[in-house]
Amino acid sequence: MSETILVTGCAGFIGMHLCKNLLQDDYIVLGVDNLNDYYDPNLKKARLKQLKKYQNFEFKKADICDLPSMDTIFDNFKPEKVVNLAAQAGVRYSLENPQAYIQTNVMGFMNVLELCKKYKVRGLIYASSSSVYGGNKKLPFSENDSVDKPISIYAASKKSNELMAHSYSHLYGLKTTGLRFFTVYGPWGRPDMALYIFSEKIAKGEAIQVYNHGNMMRDFTYVEDIIQGTRTSIEKNYHCEVFNLGNNRCEELMGMIKIIETKLGVKANIEFKGLQMGDVEKTFAEIEHSKAMLDYGPKTTISEGIPKFIDWFLDYHS
Image 1 (cartoon, rainbow, N blue to C red):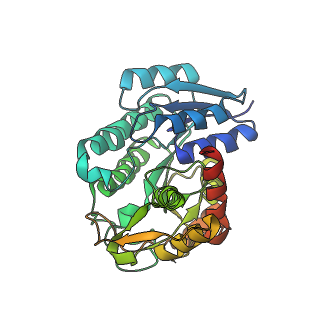
Image 2: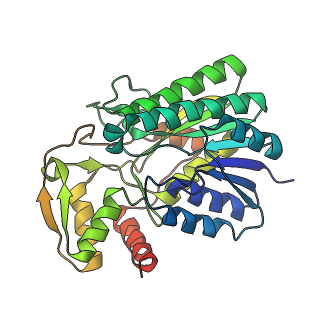
């Protein structure tokens, strides 16, 4: 019989891609999502529609913060493994609504851990974030680096997930794998991310706001590469690990804008701004540990990946 996997945040960007990948390989997937309105729920529903085509997919609308509902779901579905991608995302929004981050990312994650323990789940894979590296100056960021100085509540909530998971691995033998995702992009991407915002505004001829006067560098990682690393994490199911999943390239934000301009055939109207609170200037993943343990090898450059996103974006909005 195929393995049963519960994926929280299944209508999210990474969640949808992961579910689709698992479903194509005949896993039995139960997707959970609260379909909240942090960004347009219609995009989440459109993603969900992609998954409902598969007979081995089942969806439950629920919030990981609602312990009784989640308990019922675990009891009925009896997942062998759980992938927790449900989270309140975004660094900037964490400045406006910090409570939402503690509620979902800390309390919600606590519920997931407790239920994994209660129902003797064989492995928990969960989303962490490159933001845990905070203001670290040493590049590239390595899993061995200290991550004790988060510069946003979002980052602090993700670091707390790693600490909580470590506790459950130590106390109860629960197998946990944390994945530090680095600036994930691609088709079906999030509307609060720079690539989506810039593409939308440049296509409409509207001005874009570029922070830190354009001196920003990110390790942009294509979603299919992220899925490959996540899938291997599910299969390997290590006892207690944390991995960087990035592209191992530190790219200039202005370079991303140039690719968008070229693909759309439109020149961007740029308003340069100062560095925003909570933002870091550079992210850059060292991936030696992921290569060794997950056979991880990202393949997609931004010059290949960004045009793929824009093709999807134009089609979705047509």
